[in-house]
Image (cartoon, rainbow, N blue to C red; front, side):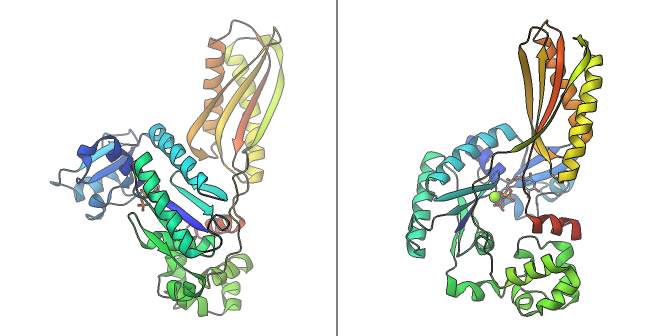
Length: 361
Ligand code: TTP
Ligand code: MG
């Protein structure tokens, strides 16, 4: 199994289209728009990271750290990043038996069949893939190769940029043991602090810690997860992403109409209904669609994909109204029935959800 993760992704892509940026600290900012300065760092290249700039940090702080460094600040250009991401994922996929994208710049690959179960061959495959991506796209990425996804993820993070870390089955324990526990997926600041109180600092400490004691403290699912993770145990398979499921509601208007305010009252009701369903499933949505059945029996629809998945009912209602408005601008017919649809992200891992609810990590 392996995990591939692009290096300083958004910033690297800015360097790709403007080579004059290379060698300078580059910070990609998500500007909130409140003031020219307000917002947070999305990511930064490694030159900027040397000065302590990190994802999530307020932009004004990053500016302060980089004062006098000839640093470049750029706003996120998500459409461009997504375009390149799609190309990259297309290439990675051709090297996989099974392929699972888990973020804009990250994917798990099962290559067991392709490399005949050999870690040596896996290494060769990664080097070929790196060269291929370098010529076709011009970017670098880091890779972790291991007997399972969990250890592949940890391995990928230990060597950046352009890294390749291979952990064979008999090396797992020696590899994991000295690392701090926050290298494990799902162990963030709060969990680490709680573990430190128990005297658990390294993955080795955690591996030796009594599993029953962990279960008493963190509950069965998490306690067992922590114990297994620290021991390098992970049975999960690389899964091709399923089609996004959708939730939708359609209703007939009291009268045929093309009055925005009147129809929007109905999309609000439908949005609220859809949203209630969403909350029950505890998932987010990223795509919103509005469909209109017109008086002349034709059907029109409009949809929008958000930059980030959300659970907000305000965004849902507002976007549905905007889509409805655009739809009405493109027709002179009355609307007879109207529908609201969202695409949801199916099946978040149970453990991941628990981790979030438990510690906010
Ligand atoms: P990461 O892979 O976490 O970070 P990275 O690719 O910038 O750096 P590296 O992998 O070399 O450590 O995230 C991928 C992209 O996601 C990143 O380029 C920007 C975006 N991102 C945010 O917008 N906010 C965040 O808090 C994080 C962590 C990432
Ligand atoms: Mg990355």
